[in-house]
Image 1 (cartoon, helix red, strand yellow):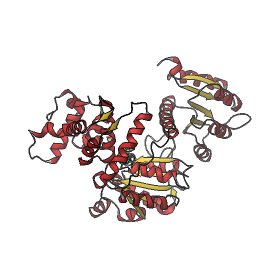
Image 2 (image 1 turned 30 degrees about the horizontal axis):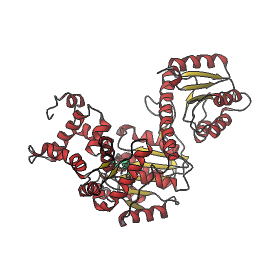
Image 3 (image 1 turned 120 degrees about the vertical axis):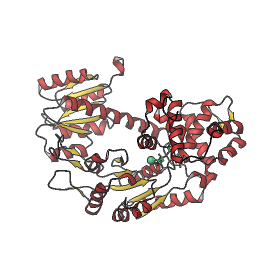
Image 4 (image 1 turned 60 degrees about the vertical axis):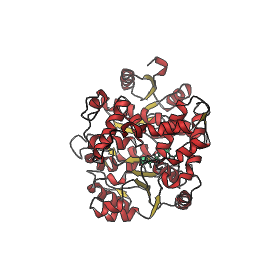
Length: 459
Ligand SMILES: Nc1ncnc2c1ncn2[C@@H]1O[C@H](COP(=O)(O)OP(=O)(O)OP(=O)(O)O)[C@@H](O)[C@H]1O
Ligand SMILES: [Mg+2]
């Protein structure tokens, strides 16, 4: 990375030695360091150039760190702030997080922890900036409702329940737009000014789910050398989006139920609970009623979350919406600076004839690829057919009846090979969520390197 590309990190501390040491360490971590001794100097530095993150001492002369934090967040909402606390009282740390700090570190700082925190904070900043750029660009990220009755019903119910604090369960196959709906609920709710915290219950190692959700005190278990707030607490005042709810381990289900009933969080190893107010939205593509019957999901928790269900229909059940979705995606691509493309009537019909197992996500990926590969401004039926048929025809000769499980594994190995192990691209081509791909790679114990090299037994 060239010098001007490197993010700037501002160190704010009144102790000169510490400031210098931290500045040097920040530079060693690959950032450009700037130093400030108090709040005024810090704000002046922020006004001068684009700062990515601030390491902010809690105890500063004149105004204290929390006051400075609030001013930073008011003037530069995208700048991530990591607080450095002296004797770290819980209350101040919580106050700092509520005021928008990314996290806090107890002094004396562990440099490698600080390095990781900074990297994570800046990663989040990247996401936040992208999100802002998207929202400024208009309706990208907004739901395209189409004209189907099924979606009209979802929309009706969503608009009714969004302003309340009632929990909402969003159900539907992969790629039907569950996350979009969750964000829409947040945006239209009384919690919209608070954070939207998404937790992918299936992507966290089962042993870490409880502490990720509910946090832990210093010393709660081996390796817990710091207090950490759980995501439930971080979502205070906003929306907690529990994605892939069906994957939540049973013991954590009990804790979640307790939280929903009492509205308070007990961090692991803590003696007193903390009050937390959040709007809960949960999503899953698992049949929860069946999971309850199978003893994999607690009935009392389902009952608690199941006040309102928004069920997103699969795309094959609302093919009339394909045209408006395609139009939306074409507009989005054009806004991204791609040449304007259109689809002929025949091409649209060919899309409508497809089954869309990956639902809207798959449709979006197909439209994007059609546009990328198009030689002419108008995409015709044969282009679409070639694109949608290719996958089918390839295996057709060899297609024999075999366990579906093997079929899946073969397709995953092929996709990994075709995209040189690039999982997002492979997932895209398979029309499944990236996380689903990860889960399947794990479940089938697929050696990705072997798949790429063509040495996998099914390659
Ligand atoms: N109604 C819609 N309008 C516009 N885009 C949509 C719509 N539904 C889905 N999409 C797009 O399809 C993709 C998948 O949507 P989303 O992530 O919300 O699906 P999901 O139901 O959460 O899937 P999964 O169960 O695999 O996580 C996203 O790129 C999203 O923007
Ligand atoms: Mg999702």
